[in-house]
Length: 229
Image 1 (spheres, one colour):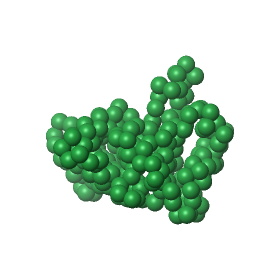
Image 2 (tube, helix red, strand yellow; image 1 turned 180 degrees about the vertical axis):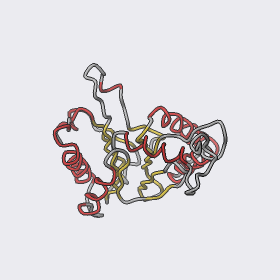
Image 3 (tube, one colour; image 1 turned 30 degrees about the horizontal axis):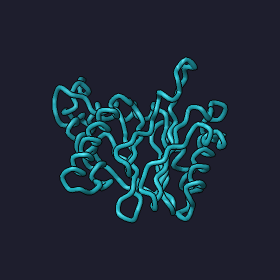
Image 4 (cartoon, one colour; image 1 turned 90 degrees about the horizontal axis):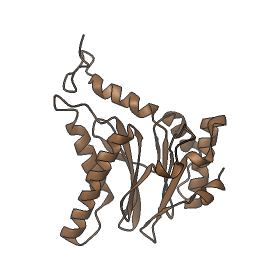
């Protein structure tokens, strides 16, 4: 009956159908796993590259927001790029204004606020992407995700994108708070192997971590990632 023609119109069931469609776009995107470990936080992201002609290094799916904050996304990655660029500017403005690094929660709150605005105005569509943010805040590392509607939550371990429910079910069984970064990365790759089956290819992944005692993003090189394949 046309209830999906605008992001500002509720259906008789109390749903914003444009938001529901955006959620489906997210679940069609390749998955990302974030895990908060005892000594830091990690993100392992499936780039979902299906064309052998693409240079894999050109398809990064873990983005640096600031030295101490990284992000990944599932869904329409061009939408994610806009949100990531805005938060990069916010992080640098905060550093210049206050001479201190921005908090991780401030970044995810900014992303969630923008996503919420795009469910409230006519003539626009919701961002078809969920964002995962990980980084160091004080003495702790933090892991957040935002959803289409502009809500955000902190997690010990989380997955977004394709097969997210299946991955989260495995995380609930196998995640342990005392695991180290190395254990977390291994767990993430083991989960991807289980979920993807014969589609698993080690070249289609990005992995990065931030240690509590270093406060700086470290990316795993291709040779380092291959040992998990």
